[in-house]
Image (cartoon, rainbow, N blue to C red; front, side, top):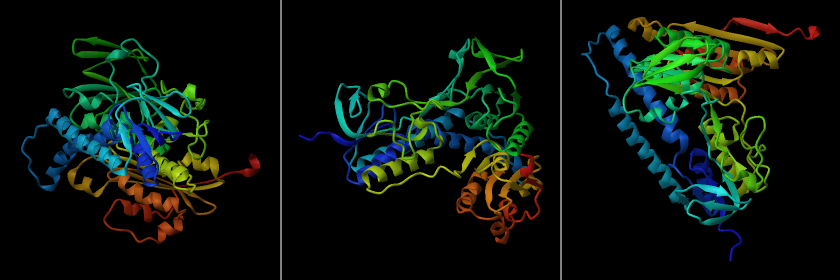
Length: 462
C-alpha cells in the first residue's frame, strides 16, 4: 500500500492553485485540489474579471457623451443593472467551467469541499475523509478586510457583495483609497451614481508615484466624484433603505449603500496551520515562505495572496508554475518579483512598472525625470476636460529606465509592453532611438528628450 494517497494536495482552486495543479499533473504527479466555493478563485469569480466587465460597462456612458463632438446624435439611452449582473454571471460561469475542465483534463481530481491540515501530510475533508499527501500547496488567497469593528459594520458591503446588488444605488459611500475602492468609484460614477470616497490618508493610491496620485485624484474629481481624505467612517446607521455614514471629521453622509475597500487579509484562519507547524510571517500576517514558496515545513508550500507578498493574480500564477516545475519538474525555478507591472482600472486608468520617483531617488545617486501632461486627441473633438500623464524615471548614472507611470486611456495595455523594456533594462537612449508611432498617446514615451527634473545626491553631505 502506498505511503501517500497523492503526491500533491492543493488547497484552493484559484488561479495560482489551478496553475500549480495542472503543471504538476503534467509532470506526472498524482494531484488532488480542494475548493469549497467555486473554481477560479477571487480573480475569476468576484475580482479582476467581473470588475473589468463592470468597468467596461460603466465607461460606455463617456463614449455616448463624447459621440456628439464627432457628429453622432444618439437618442436617449437607458441602462439596466439586472441585465449587466445577469450577463456577467453567465460569463463567470463560462470561465468557471473552463477552469474546471482544464484541471480535469490534466488528470487531477477536484474535491468540492473544505480541506484542513491535521499534520504536515494529512488533510481532513469536510466529509470526514482523510487524505495523505507527500506535498501540500496552500493557495487560499485573501478576503476583504473591514478593519476594526465599528457600530453598524453589519450594514457595510465589500467587494464580495457588490457584484450581486439587487439594484443600482443612486448614492454610494466607498471607504478606501486603493485599487478596489477607486475602481468601484469609477464604476458607480459611470452608471450615474453619486459617489463619495473616504480615505484616512492625505491622498489616494498610497505607494504609487506622487504625480500619479495627484493626477488620478484631479481627474476623478472632474468627473464629479467627491474624495474626502484625512478621515474615516466611524459609524453607520440604517434608516429603512437609507444609510448614514458618520465620519471622524464630525460630518455625515446619506447614501443608499456603504462599501468598505480598505484592504484584504490572507486566508490563513482555520486551515490547521498550527497543527502542521506552518509559521505566519509576523510582518504581514501571511504564510511565511522562502524564495521558492516553501513554508517553515519542508513539504508544505504556499503561493499567491495567502503569503501577502505581491497580491496580483499573474504573480500567483507564476509562483504556482514555478513551484510545480521545481518540486515535480526536476528543474529549479525562482520567481523574480522585481519590475512587475500593475494597473488600476480606475477612470482614468493607471498603468505602472518599476520604481516611483521617490523610490528611485532613495536608491540612486543621480535620477532624471521625464514627464508630460497633455490633452488626448480624442478630447479635442469631444470637448471632455481630461488629460493624460506619462512619466519616465531614469537612473542618471546608467541611463537605464527604472520606472514608467501612465494615467489615461489604455494605460494598462501600454504598460504591459513597456514592462518588457524595463525588465530587459532598456536605456533612455534606447527609448529615444525608437521611432514614434503617430498619432498615438504612447508616442510621448519615445519623444520626451529634455528632463523635467534632475536630482543629484550630495554624497559629501550624507
